[in-house]
Amino acid sequence: MSLQAIAPLPRSAAPVSWTDMFRHGPVFAATAIVLLAMMPPTLAALALDPRTLNGVNVWIKPLKFEISIALYLGTLALFMAWLPQQERQARRFRVWAIVAAAAAALEMIWIGGAAYFGIASHFNRDSSFMAAIYPVMGAVAVTLTLPSLALGRAFLRHRRSSDNPAFHLSLGLGLVLTCVLTIAVAGYMSGQTGHAVGGSGGDAAGLKLLGWSRDGGDLRVAHFFATHAMHFIPAFGWVVARLLPARGAQGAVWAVSTGFTAFIALVLAQAIMDRPFIG
Image 1 (spheres, rainbow, N blue to C red):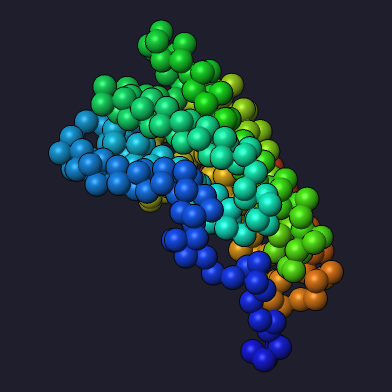
Image 2: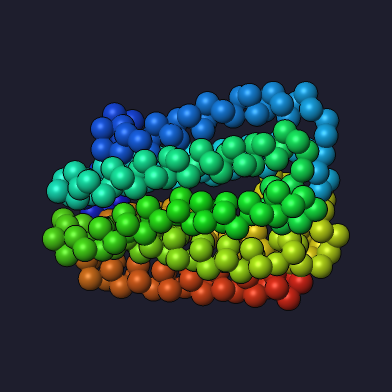
């Protein structure tokens, strides 16, 4: 296909600036910036504090969560700029943004506090306090995920009136699947004794950066991909919306969304069967 055959960028998928993100999703964007601002102190703690947990520095986990939650909330701020104006101004999204910011703060207090004391935040049954608070923090994590469902439903409601229905469909499906798949995978994980299935169970020899086990199953793989449905599927939708006619592009988005869901089920089953994602 020649470059001349590629359709121009639809108005509803036009690039969004930082100004747009702060104007349309100010609480999401501001919370993401705060989390990014927490990274330098966390990196300093990582460099100065030699303590380890499960084979890696105790500050690795807070750093990962700062990055992942900042990316999640920043993406919501970005997507808010593509919502129809009447939806952007709905009171429910202002409420969801405040709820998400509060949930993010509680998550980081819990995970950062556990790192400070050198104990595990997740699957910690050695401490009666941490064991008691674990289900509460699970509810907080679910609450943090729910704004993606609300935003996804809004995109799905308005996709037919959009000037770019395939892209809006990909935004809606990606956001809805992020919520549904993340809660499903995390719900299963919470009932286990840990994220590792077989293998050494330690993170020291895991996959670089991500830490996934290379000698056994790791439930975090399915969790990772589930939380990033909101990135993978809209990225695909953005491309096919420019390359295919509207109906064909929408069909492709549905097919990839179905395939992505099946992929999550596959990698979860792979972990449960004690098989590493990458050996």
